[in-house]
Image (cartoon, rainbow, N blue to C red; front, top):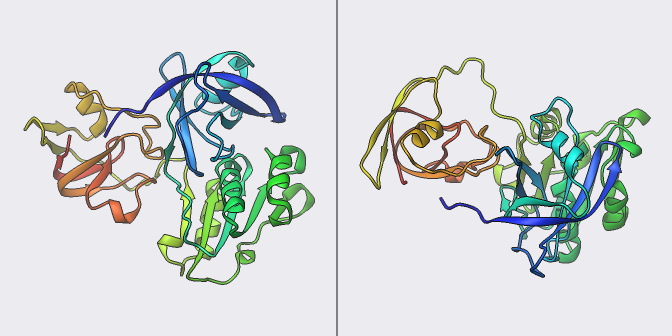
Length: 313
């Protein structure tokens, strides 16, 4: 687990995609190229008070001269979007991390179906750009209330052309997962948007393999029946045995013991605090790690263990 590069980038261009969504283009004030990234990646924006928020990159992955993000103002959110709307202006500087990708676009498919809801379209726009460049067959289904409330719609239409299918609820158009079509061994479905959209699509594809369905989540796992219990964590590098009480996270307790660990969302959706472990029965409560990695990786912010766990720190 390594700290991510933090850069001071300049807002080169800022425009309103919709009345409540700003489209921001970021460049380095001195360097001509930024760290490379791939479709599905996000960056962390570090606010002056230390808060960190994640935003998906929606530009062209082949263009390393700039990053593009879109931020929807959420009046009842955690404050990051309100700060961005009130503060960001062309010419100002903001601290941005190197990209991380929790929703990588596989290149081995023959057909792709992208399903977006509202601001969840941002990573899928970047995917559409890459699929177009790769010559892959795809369809992008975009769900929003109306054309005027659909962020990045003009850019999507330009990139996707006839491969874009819009579903506007104000017009009585409701997305039906049946339009995804039949299961195929080389078909991949990518979903990003409100939880109800993710649940509807995943439910309709219950017979598909996990490797073919890819989602990005923005909300933590909620389980009213889950009752956290204390457990012991052993740190391989130091041999320390640390008690994690029921009312504290593993991440918080490790920090109390002077381990300077990176984190961002702290609700199990961004992947910043991923850590390896050697043994123990881990209770995975994140929405990032695929099943293939859960036998030896965990998220410190939300994962817990039964009795004990040995951490590769």
